[in-house]
Image (cartoon, rainbow, N blue to C red; front, top):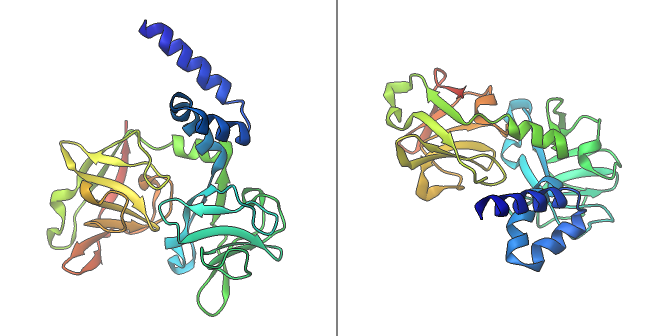
Length: 259
């Protein structure tokens, strides 16, 4: 019956939690039943997140969640940004770089850390961002993986509220309470507006966006905040609202967590 199936699913989930990356990849490829069960364990093993504030918000759009690729680059693991296959993370010449997917393995990029560590999340050196002329320290930038990343993602509230005044009441109609969905979008939590499943909140290209459900996962919407934090309620940046063809600051707008 249903209880036996649930027990079997629990046992499968427990067994997969002890699997190596190679074993999980094999389970994912083997059959449809294993595929669904293997996904969360693979995601936990393969995901890293580069998050935090940068000076003048430099390179914020290239931060986010990255997934480990099967291919090595210069003998090191390499990663592809979720939702944006034009950005990658790789090791070259004693540095980890986030840069264009057109340049994997080269000593160039937008974000870097000088460390020969095997995995970027183990570095204790300060990450840096490029401003077009020089590299600037970004001491608040962090690379998370494994238990640390899972713990941070688990903090996402089941519901959040985007509330407060906006300039000339712009986009006030799309504000309100949003409920967390089970599905991740671009490696981040996603939300549906309570009472209006045509409006959603998601992360894309360094920003949290409120927009129509038809644009889910895209770098567009009515309201946004440029912050790669793993939870929208954790952002300390100023939210912005669309006003014609531009976005204007809405300093009174806040994102609050609820139970």
